[in-house]
Image (cartoon, rainbow, N blue to C red):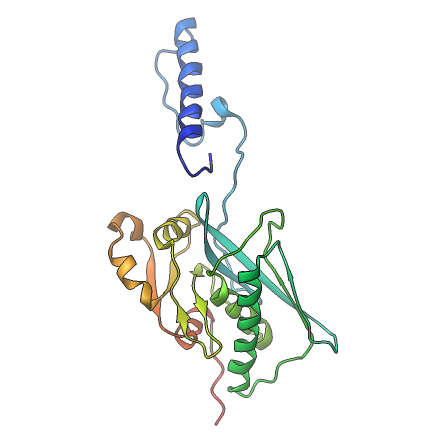
Length: 241
């Protein structure tokens, strides 16, 4: 039901119970077992869809984890480069002011990080897009994800599949803590992700979570973008001397 509470969930369960009770009363059914496959017979077509993990290496796209009013969710971030003398940063996908500032910081970091490794970056126009543009998005969780996507774009190095991340970053590449860790890990499990990268300062929050939330996930705690990019990219350029 994709809601913060359970009121609509209770209504949907009641709908199933009433339909089962009607069939029992009519004599067409003695017992009902409602599983994921058969639920559409009672409630109709699926109404909500969640993000899923990428299945192959990809350039200029990264998977982030966000905290929404409905809990955690997976957020794909795509970036592109167009020839231009202006060097503008275009942001689309109904992004709020916090995410816009994060994207600008991520671009400045990515260019400086690659320059330290002898990779000159095209001064062209960069487009950052977060799909599902009809849904407003904001909050301090996407900075590192945008930075990974931009570093991949400007270096041509692929991002590993099945990897997600959350956190903010500074211009010098320090990864800052964010909230909603439990909800984000549940979203990662639901999406079929295998590795989740979190800020090292979130370790106390991770330790407090039940084992059932962490099960099946490889959680990597990182203090800076060097550590995060080592996990996120299939390879790293050597640092220039």
